[in-house]
Length: 313
Image (tube, rainbow, N blue to C red; front, top):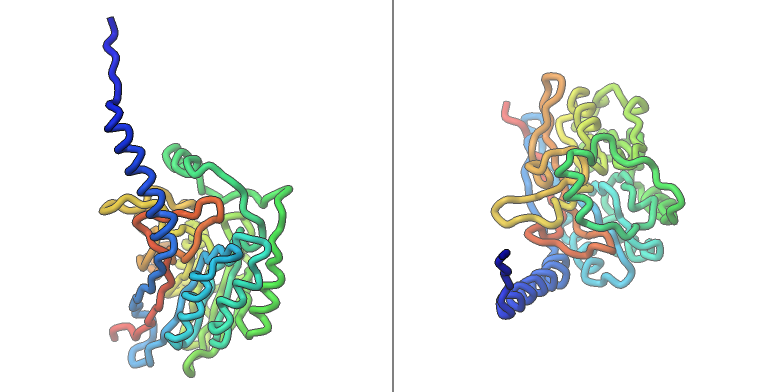
């Protein structure tokens, strides 16, 4: 006769209580616990003056997110030399005015931007467990997703026009230049590889001559983009998209990356190697979430102040 095992009522209630508390913490506290990270990257010529670059990404603004707006506005108090925005500003078609209000003070500084899929398309409800399943089977993230069909579009052109009017460089499969603290920064960017809008052949050729620094910018850090930028000799690549894993395991880290980069480089500063060359890679964990999964665990929302410092001679 098969034995029957029953979970004691007290144990079931305890598990339910812990699960509820975890969700409440992840949604009510950590997802709104904004942090500023500071990172130093030695990429400038010996003897050059350090540059302070604010990297913001994955805002995923939803109408009514007042605390996020106040925090973003407060970042202008850092007085960065330049601002790089690596996309996914929206998670609500009605949130463009709030994004522009939040970024308004930062638009006064030299800057550049690329867009992500959520700037172009409205978010869809999706079971988060699918990310785990796809990662476990190795089926996710090899080439990105095909462009969305029959999905409402976000008014990304309103963001583009406002960023352009502020003088930020549009790096959508394009090159651009900005001047920051007396330095000339040449930038090369790609449209979002996550929806296969990247066209590296349109910007290939490596860093431009005559600039004090060259940077590469992309929303999603897919390996094909990182390989191309690194092989072409860019010293630093900036990206976002991953949300740092969003739901992480304490003392272990991320389970998923939502692209083909390895979990060990899902956020923060690391390096990438390709064709015998090495680039620094900074992946922002971002400061928002998709409106349908408004939780973070062991991965608080963030922006990063990068101090670009001289290399050792």
